[in-house]
Length: 604
Image (cartoon, rainbow, N blue to C red; front, side, top):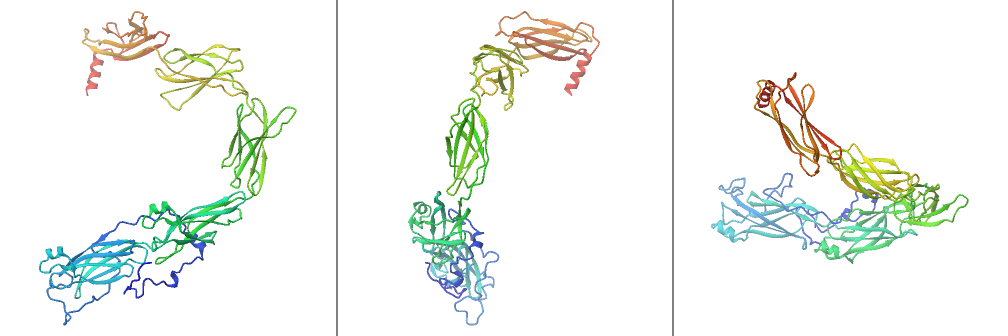
């Protein structure tokens, strides 16, 4: 408990408690509206210093103590605004262990250096104390030699009994004159705090024994255990001592130590639904007890409503069941039953679950068979059973294809070849996507031939010089798809990296002339054509037999034929080894006049 102090501004011993400060446990429902459950109190704000009392700060007592001058008048050398008094409030030290504050500073009366200023210390919670600036301060003596070193103040007082951020100010008086020396803040903490860590049913099968546990600390008795009151649905359930060892609390709050844990067992409500448990920290010393805080909830199961059981998805060996999960369900047990054309098998266990969820997968089924499923939802009060419609498993998947490879590639197509290993599929599913449009997947199917053997298919309409991911699966009606076979392949064909027409000095007064050049790889032959009124071959390369060789080249167009327009169209036609044709087109000015106009336009 903090030491008793007398506050002239309050007029009573601060250690005394009025009847209104006694812990009250009634009106819990109203208190529950303000519930919160902090793991620990918020960090206190940093200490602040002010040069003068902030706006709205309470005024100190009007008249300073001490002996006034016999005639009651202030010395003429001292102004009425405090210009004859200098000093500062140097520091405020707060001790949470001793629950004290220590204030220190100095003041000198420059008009009367040998006089001692009266120091008033007061805060925003009604505390005020007087002292004298007569303590030894050699630094002040060095700064004011005529005054000497005995002009300091250093006093220790009990901290405020009101929780929260407190502001403490100091003022130096001489006669009726005064000067504000500054203000500091600190945090006073007396209210108990802690946390309700757990409130859970220990025996869910019978709905008995609610385990509660947590920790609590009273700052006024930091090393002593305190107690807590546990409320359930607004009613006092039990009172526990917070006196068990909690190393985690001691590590988080070294000042308080770790002997502040509590735990116990109370009888839970038997009414179905959610229930609230909260804790009241019992106050010791100054401060006040908490409202019901640190809330936890637990759930008491009720009757389970009827629910539907359906089969959402089947494979050749599994079935996914769907059902409406209810918070009253504690476990689900599943069974399966084989349904033949003329007989019905026994119900067999198919698994169980004890966690929330709306789906369950039954495994270990046989392909191409009919099954019925049953689910039983239960808790310690009751159980409800639902049965699904009959569902038929898929046939086993056809044997996967093998040996998937690229047969040939062109500019816009890919031909793939693979080995058909199944006699039960009726078609193949080909899935493909390219690296330039991620997320866009396309599919195509084509019918299979009877029996097994090699198969070939060509994908068309593809993008030139692009990598594709391709997979192939065997598919049959009423059966699973086979495991896919996949490969990466790129469209190919001849590649043109450059085709340009550069004007040259003309030997004709009216016609433009050009040097044409190109860079080509992977081509069998290159043909350049020119079109003014009709298309004519301007250049043909020899036939190339080496796919790795380049067919770069150049030619000059003297433009000696007659023309009836102002434009020439040049085409570069590149023929690939696989028959693919890549075409590039250029349009150039046919007359010198048109060429010069274009040059003038480009330069502007």
